[in-house]
Amino acid sequence: MTRTAWHRLLMTIVVVFLVIAALSYVTSIVLAPSGGRSVAGLWDGWAMFALVAAIAFGVVDFFVRPLGGQSGDADVMAEAEAARTGSTPTQRAR
Image 1 (spheres, rainbow, N blue to C red):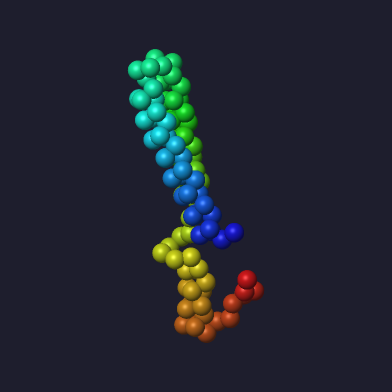
Image 2 (tube, rainbow, N blue to C red):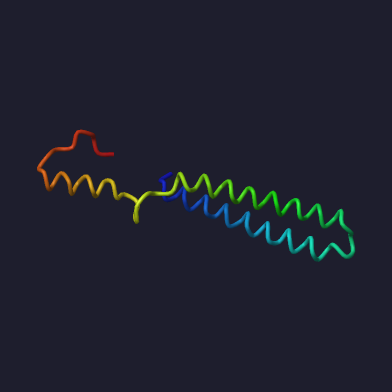
């Protein structure tokens, strides 16, 4: 997988966990009058777990996401440098 594909996958996971957190919190509010504090606390716990998971995946995504505006910027910059200086690349193309 490319870095862009990993970034998209991780962002999808973050959004899913944020939606789960919001739904769990709303469920805790809705069920609190009928179920009491224990039911509300249970759903609040699930909401906090989902929020922490979303933050964790977001931190991982921070280190995975592609640098620069577009993926492949390093290759473009290397080609531009080679064209400017007339040097040949020292590494094989991927």
